[in-house]
Length: 343
Ligand SMILES: *Cc1c(COP(=O)(O)O)cnc(C)c1O
Image (cartoon, rainbow, N blue to C red):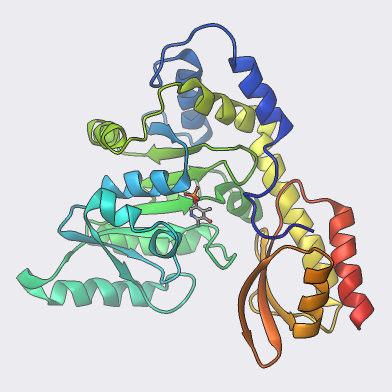
């Protein structure tokens, strides 16, 4: 009963097979190999962006930090949600790589246009002493399992672009959001005004690769220098590309995301019929935030269930349940049985 995160499961066998296929003969290092060139071409095609820059890095933190460094200068600020991964979970890497400051917008999970405008105006009002607005970063799926609609992304991008800010999408769960919205990669990115995407693959089936996609080809020199200087240019680069090949082949990436979203939807539906469970938000992808009694929590933990505890108050425990593509129906049934037996 493993709901702790979608990075705890195995890498998908199709990804492992692709890595094994690539494990033959010689190939140039540092991304000069054919597999990497093919992968770049495939991602450009998937995003309908023939000019886009595509780079592979091993972690989401590296993808976010390097992408943001290409959007914001050291005297600028990057606007993000208060609980954004770049703020809470990256040990300051985005500030370290960009030199920019992070500014938290509003107090909601999803950034609201009015809060964003107010924060830009606040920073401009400081005049020459104020930090300059530099970029906007949105997490899609958000840290609380919510999804920005394409129109919401557009509205925020329009505000950003009106002030010459670049827009970054932290897509650690890009596929889960895209499948849930039933839109194309282009519609959820550049067509909605996004300038840079961290295209996650690790959580959804790989073991360590994410793509950075920059829609402005003029950023090539800067990104490549920053990647090398930051120690994120993989030498045996074909193994990053091989994972991505396995991930993209036969739509594994959308199949995996559809599966984890469907597993999550099934769990949500069943949880709704159990009085014990209260939802803290409406689940939209493959992540659930809900609260249960201390008693229920104890029984689940005793039975070996793994999940994150967000907080505890008034005999209720707020928890996060993440469904990955590999989660078994039997595990969900076992989890539900413990909760319904209590009732
Ligand atoms: C998992 C995750 C990342 C990537 O984190 P790494 O541990 O650096 O790979 C980035 N953003 C969000 C929102 C995430 O959930």
